Image 1 (tube, rainbow, N blue to C red):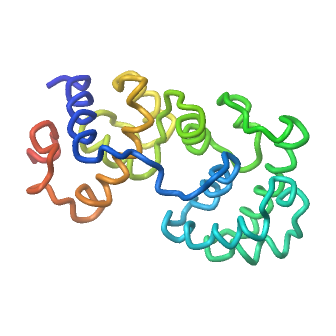
Image 2 (image 1 turned 120 degrees about the vertical axis):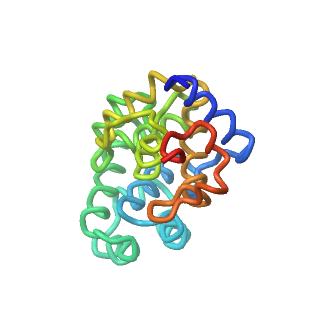
Length: 209
């Protein structure tokens, strides 16, 4: 199979296995997804989802985040790790959203990358989930699994993103990224992948090894 054929087969199989391709982070407003994603850096989504209910109750508006007492914000997000850096960037991003974008999350990669603490991974997630645009979220699960599938030889997120944009149907790319995360948790784990039970075994060069 060619890389393109393997990618299309992976899209098909994972779409059947995980029809509900949704982000595992819990949020109601677009900026809340931005904040939750910022907290998820080097932290599990499950832990973030334990923290955000209290966080969003205490700071119910974008303005309240922009005006937040930094020490109080740090204390709430502390369980997510790197809390000083994360709290600072969350407050600064809220301030910039209000000052520059009128409180509306921008819908381009270039503009999202101007927000403090926002890299390409988060920007892609926001573009895909909030605006329904083609997006490739190259997180650790995605990099590991697409590498095992032989769809990329790279480990750097930006290079993996570029490789997969060439292979994935644009309209499928964002949902595919969510499905890969679910697949990584259930089957293709980092240490002990369940190759014998893998629905992608027929198109995975790593399974043959």
